[in-house]
Length: 494
Image: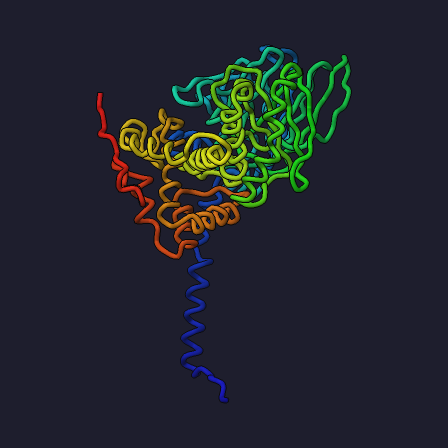
């Protein structure tokens, strides 16, 4: 076989082309462009999420949070600091942190005092010297934390932020209440590992996401508790609770450590339902795949909260949810546990993707409940179907929420209905393959509605965008596969 050799003329032309390309890449214009990219500029004050445009921040990525809290007593301000290790994704003249309320003290960047100003819920930080693109830097914010800070929403969330209890506090950061607790990059797409160092009186216990790594006596009869989150956590899923708690370890499933955190007076009344966690883990593992974290537990909230929260590895469940009927208790417990797979491990890319989190949790909650003596899953979905156009009118389609209606009915039963319709369309076996593939592909990552449509189509071997998009967007609910008798109620306008 002969070897091709270019002619001398071809070689000269190729060399000239290479020189031209090199000049384009390294000439004055390219150098000027590179210099412009490396010129320090302010980081964006928000990520532009349609629901909360100023949540999150541009110009850097958080690599680690350390929270140091010197907690004193219920509803009492205390000394706190947050240390943030980050990497600049652009050359930064200044950058923002999401931080609301609280009395601000000193702020340092790489150990040097920084200038700051408050702008609503933004803390604008100007370091002594600009930060170069790609550089690592450390921000430390000293402040006086105010554990009475909370805000209110007129949807399922109600109160969020610091939630007081009779002898301490629990956290409810969802949707964007972390900024009331610590300075942060407060958006669900932004996740980082956490270290929690919390000092309490000796008669109080502190708990947080992850693993207890140290418990040390401190001067004045106090105790410092140190926890490591072990995996990255979105700010809306951070939990830190302080109170008269019992830490109850029990046998989990396949090496999963189970640790419940229960107010002493509620240990016995809640035991029968908390003991069901291994069964719930087993059922969900069969449906979705291996549990994604090293540990799990229920934090029983001695509060009047109206809704639980899937804080990562330690779900906050109000006491009322565990003092009622078995059917109701299990629905709530399975809902929050499902989130550990879908919502916590597989996170949402934007708040418009919330249906992927809440819809899945409601879907598996209702499926489990029907199999264990609860109401008919089909009946619940038929009711949701009948009301779907009304919910679209009032609250937005499943993947088209508006900020005031983010946590209304459409994101729960209305979004579970989308999954129910998908299962009817592709069949139970293919649907289960889609769900397991969704978790396996995006475990430990964030994902969007478009990602789900693409993966479902790939697994099913057919383009499902034409089926799923009308279910997720628009004002009109499509026909329900297999149920021509199901009818959508007319929209009532007021």
